[in-house]
Length: 209
Image 1 (cartoon, rainbow, N blue to C red):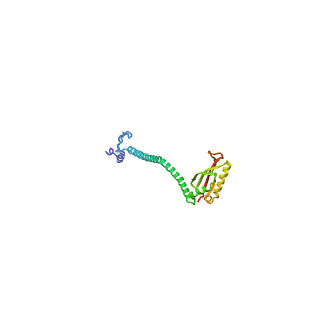
Image 2 (tube, rainbow, N blue to C red):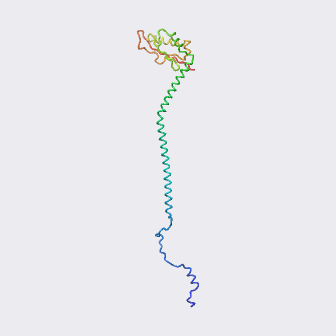
Image 3 (spheres, rainbow, N blue to C red):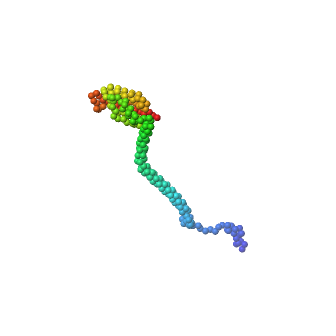
């Protein structure tokens, strides 16, 4: 009987060996039993990133559209006001020119120049062979136009002598800086008679104050 009983050491060794059973599971073919799959989080994150990029792009496009609209509005205002602005600049330039003339005339008139006395002095000192038919007070000068009788040489001599006479006149000469013929200031008259006749022009420039 003692020979049939298992030894104590044999029982301990049998207990250490796990019970054997076949394992037929194929883990690659087993279904995924997770409640929330990992692919869901991956796809969700990708969709969120795509939506964020789309929203950012849309916001940039909207801002760019607003800038284009504002630029078009400014350009329209510039084009609308450009014509009026150009006209205003032209008017201002004309005003400056006319203002300068008015200032010069005012400064010239404020001197001791008296137009009526000037005319009387011209009438009293005008030589017989000269005739005045035009007197104009300009910005800071006086222009005299008239005719002189005689041949070209005699007419030129008489007109030159008249210039010297005006320069030496105590009531006229001191009031002007220069008295001279302008360019083409002496030319033949179209109504020349038998003795000849020349048209002359004298420029009397006022003194600067």
